[in-house]
Length: 143
Image (spheres, rainbow, N blue to C red):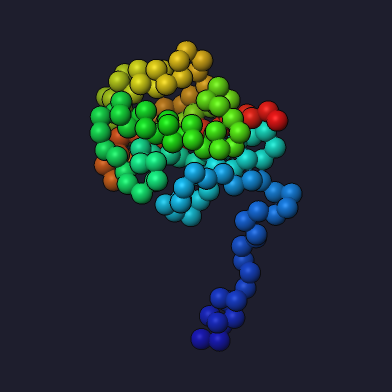
């Protein structure tokens, strides 16, 4: 018991934002133990986003097109909160629950970026909560 009490008092985690460390970017309350966005210098890393309402409280389940566009809108909000635009996104990784949805997802994805596409990887993954898509991104935001 003494060990557990002593262990609980140890500072095992570093401070979340040292003065010279990366900036944490958020547009709402994260739903887990992660930062929605982390910016270091000109690089912004956006954690995997899902089709959530603007407040991030509820998942929205819809067609692959609806889920893709809402997920990309959530990424856009984080990029804009960090001072960038969609044009600053240089890489996306998309996880689809069913690769049979790829063509429809790809059309929605293409319509969002309007012809100037970031590099992209798309894989099939097991996604929780009945989701069809999750996407993360990397952006370069020049000062």
